[in-house]
Amino acid sequence: MEIKKELNGNKLKISLEGRLDAVSAGDLDKVIQNDLNGIDELTFDFAALDFVASAGLRVLLVAQKRMNKQGTMKILHVNEEVMDVLEMTGFSNFLDIVD
Amino acid sequence: MVSQNKKKIVIEATLDNLGKVNDFVEDFLKEKECSPKVRMQLEVVVEEIFTNIANYAYGDDVGQVTIEGSLEDDAAKFRLKFMDHGVPYNPLKQPEPDITTGADERTVGGLGIFLVKKSVDDISYQHEDGQNILTIVKVI
View 1: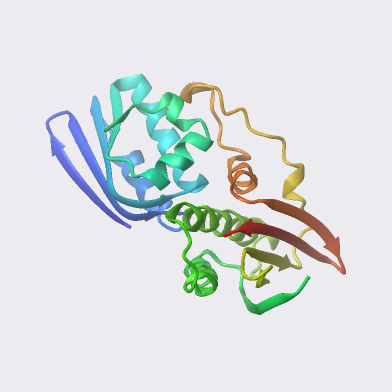
View 2 (view 1 turned 30 degrees about the horizontal axis):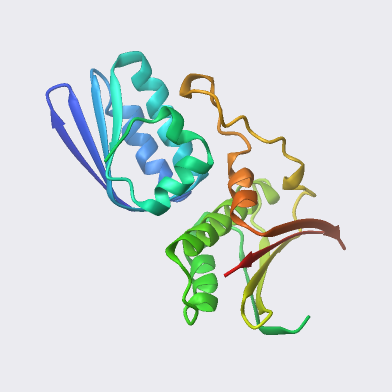
């Protein structure tokens, strides 16, 4: 999985490309742990994300919990298959998913 | 029931091998016109079950997992069996997670097997001859 970060003041955009699976979830977890200091607007771009399962959901949950304390978080361009997983698990209820 | 196309692989249960298991499954599906949804669901199943075995079955040791796939009923059904000799563990006994709560109240425990159950048409667990055997059936 490719992780692309764009920092603009207090806004961070993270674009994911490929598979957010048990192998790559650790890489995203590191970004979440290390790069969110002072960020009040976190945006994920899922346009090129093909796959997510529970290991990836865990990292998204950590990010959402953190941003609930310090700002906002939204997710852009979720494809149909990834959306299915977010809906099945009820993650779509608390994630701010924008078309 | 007539099984066609039965194949198996025996590999080390390590996360590095996740791609190989996905390739093994993809090989069964390549001549089928599966919807992207079915493909995704099977990828979720493989990821969750294989990862679980890789992370927990053998503790800090490395053990092997045998994965057997077969197409049945004129290739309308795909059966996938995961067998390991690790700690006896029935994932179907995990309590269902509460998927209605907000982020702050959430934990992700149990979400993996929950996703698997939601993604398959049948799932069963047996412990036989010292082996964990988890079998899923997916209409494809």
